[in-house]
Length: 287
Image (cartoon, rainbow, N blue to C red):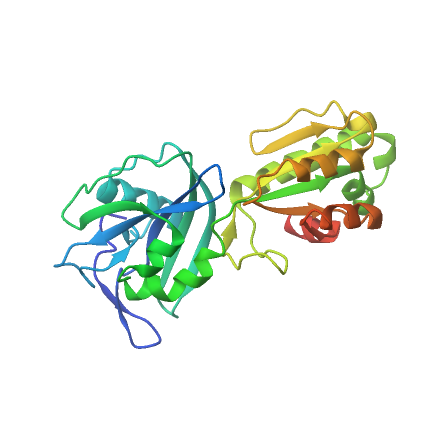
């Protein structure tokens, strides 16, 4: 498990040669301005490098002990002088060639972070709109995946109808201790937030892993449940359904919203606002 033990050429099942014995990953940092326009941090590659002179993302070969996220953040530091501050990982898109893969780690940036070429592999780094990206001479691998990745730039928020989910779980005695049942669900969802979701419902980007923001709406006897780092808790002052609708309304227009509920009336209200809806069984299968 030595540093840089992933440097070297590998061949995929398509017969193509790629850099990275254990695969590779890159960081796609994206910032949405107040109008919802995204800008991504793009890198112009040095002429001497593989596919030199093209534009892509800071990235490179994974070491044997690294996962895609750790490798992408390391490479972004080495090539673009990014420290990871001001970045929140929101998803991983996997381009699997069979026997070799490239993982694009999509991270929400708190602003147009300062970045500069930090080694000889980078010539230039710029925050570009999607239209400007498409107009560049792109690295072939990035050009192939860009249409799919472009649709995954917006963060995802998942709003949980806790009363409905706990009821659907139907564990013995849950109705006698609604606060305890909600606290148990909170702990499980917090662990899910840390590890990431695998497999999103239809209508959402096909990410290998997704790290959404979770909002749990609690009501009645469960209103005093305390939040955990990965989950925001909203205590409904009255109707839980009304609080969920308001939570959907509060989400910026460029973010996707998924509401977890089996309530038909609530489903109609939130889909009218543009949210997607999935039943509790989907969430419970992830826990």
